[in-house]
Image (cartoon, rainbow over all chains, first blue to last red):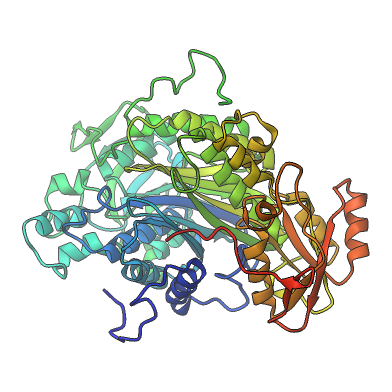
Amino acid sequence: MNAPADPTNPLRELSQHEDDVLERIGKIVSERTIVRGERHVGDDAAVLRPFVGEAIVSTDVAVWGVHLDEQLFGIGDLGFKAVAAAVSDLAAMGARARGLVVAVVAPPGTDLEELHYGIAEAAQLTGCPVVGGDLSRGNQVSVAVTVLGECPGGGAVLRSGARAGDEFMVTGPLGASSAGLRRRRDGAPLNDELVLAHRRPWPRLREGIAARDAGASAMMDLSDGLGLDLHRLADASGVGFELTAVPVSEGANLDEAISGGEDYELVIATSNPERLRLVFHDRGLREPISLGRAVASPQRRLLGGEVFERKGFEHEL
Amino acid sequence: MNAPADPTNPLRELSQHEDDVLERIGKIVSERTIVRGERHVGDDAAVLRPFVGEAIVSTDVAVWGVHLDEQLFGIGDLGFKAVAAAVSDLAAMGARARGLVVAVVAPPGTDLEELHYGIAEAAQLTGCPVVGGDLSRGNQVSVAVTVLGECPGGGAVLRSGARAGDEFMVTGPLGASSAGLRRRRDGAPLNDELVLAHRRPWPRLREGIAARDAGASAMMDLSDGLGLDLHRLADASGVGFELTAVPVSEGANLDEAISGGEDYELVIATSNPERLRLVFHDRGLREPISLGRAVASPQRRLLGGEVFERKGFEHEL
């Protein structure tokens, strides 16, 4: 969808010759994401300048027809979302992005150009360059993205650090992605604002780094919905929680905000919410929104005094 | 195939509940590959101790039925080979292995236990721990492995450094993997020595590090066969070559040695072959075998005075 209209585009007629195909795809991704002093596509492996502090790594695979409906979206959306979901895992640790590699499986005839433009666009927008990849024939399109990041000075923020009394905050209102999917199913165009929230999620890298710098005690990204992910964070930390409110995106409903998933906002636990707000303010970031507090009893999980059930997007295996 | 016979094995009856499945698979891989001071499976991302020197990264995807015949081999072989192929790319740079992540796509009913035992076995044997992963439903099994390594002091060995006059050497005789595939097709058992060469390739990590320490000018691993990979190295370096001989594994023929692929021996270019031999000898490694020399004319590509054609395993795309 972001391919240049140039009719001489090298991928218009994909050669079946492996080295040629890899070289052409390499051009799409590397033209958009170049890092001086590093060697990326073209050797057995990429060579990256030394990492500063802890190295952070995560992998995510997106399958065409499973993670995204091929009747409603373009294959470039699959590429974009696969990258955004993986980069969001770096954000959730408070890491800086350093690069990503992508392994694509695709049947013959797949629009590899469109797919890789989606990948390259997300890599460029998030500042996480594509440094390598692999490509294989298969009978269904899948995109496995592995992201690399670094935490200068250490202190990656884990899920397990929340303590009773911490405030839970979230980097934005929830439900827009799920609402966008609903609207697309109802016929909304691809450039509808909520549909765009579903097609073009935005990993909260700057917010994650700000939260780490502000001494957040625990953090994770909301990929499967607050109704599932907050339970996971509470489980890992051995705490319960009492939520006062869940912020709902304009155009979304409460159910979408709680269990829709794919918003990729960050949920942050902190013993010093004022400091978090101050750091976000200083860096020009949207003010984080309070959800409520962590409590000592791991069994106690409430929203507005009612039981907050574990529900969200559970992937079928 | 290397699963304990224990009938209480937690994966005997796979729950369909995502978190449970991931936790059980996490146990298989993490029990075999633990690194103190690091946090692997269980958070948004893995946190690794700081890398020393350049960071090396490569990704490889293996598809069941494309990269390995599901009629002839077990799904654990697919997992093992996917890891070995990726780790071999670290060897090809002269890197130390630091860890890997694995993204698996599989249809319902797949023996995920067997697959992950193969993955874990290769990770353990190569000293490259599984630090994270992802799992999705799909209609064909694929395994995308991303490996991370480091080159203390820098100096990862690229494909592009060979110069006229350099000697080309290889870390072992070639063709065993391809001969093993042929023997398996002819009915040989899975524990046949050549069939094992195909099922259980051995990445040459120690040899790659030794070659880097000995000042090798270029290096790559032989994944698609000398008849393709040596041309790639020569292309990248802008040189030609005159080979005197190709070492053939016992039980293999010359065609298998040249174009069979998947031997994962390293081909090394060096201006100082005596130093290379000495370093290998000092470290108890098998003596590298001379193939011939690099020459200035990129068009000149000979074996025993005859044209050495470009042929090997070209993946269909």
